[in-house]
Image 1 (tube, rainbow, N blue to C red):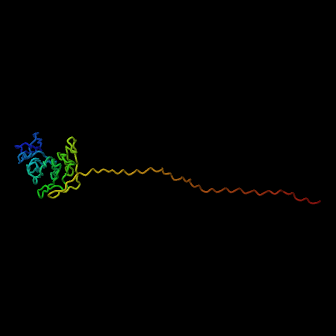
Image 2 (tube, rainbow, N blue to C red):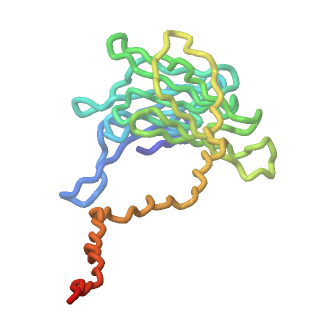
Length: 253
């Protein structure tokens, strides 16, 4: 996808090329898209969905620097606008950066002068882009040019936004803020409230103490094997005392 904001007498243009392996060259996919407002900077930014069927084009200076964003779907060999134009507010320069989900049904639009990223979801039944509830992502510092660049995951649930003047200082190195939503829901007209990124969840609780090693378990006392009761030996029978042998009495003559 190529944007040329100075083409078409400064009204701008955008086009898509695809590689033709047969002749080894890039050939146009569909018609060239032309801006309609003088010096509107149509094509200042472009984004192509990962499936290459949806194209977003930013025109940052249309409507007196409010800015517009256009989304197109490729079908039948050409591009046709999907839903109505997404318009900015006074002084927004909406369309500073763009990102699309894989199928092109979620678009994130940067407004660097407002330090915001605005997220929209497409309703095919109404052919309308609805602001996502809580889908206004704010920079961390006023004037940090948040949304001058961005990227989005294919599922449309995580967005990273760049702020070249992070910490609101011309000498600051810039910063990137990442936003994520677990339950992303499209809101009605008017969208939802602005949200700031949640601080990272850091578990500051000390880990539970490891159990102190106790004394080594004493083995159970050894019990000597029982011996069969010993039968005391019977004493030998005492010999009967011998009586002295008395000679027979002598008889008188």
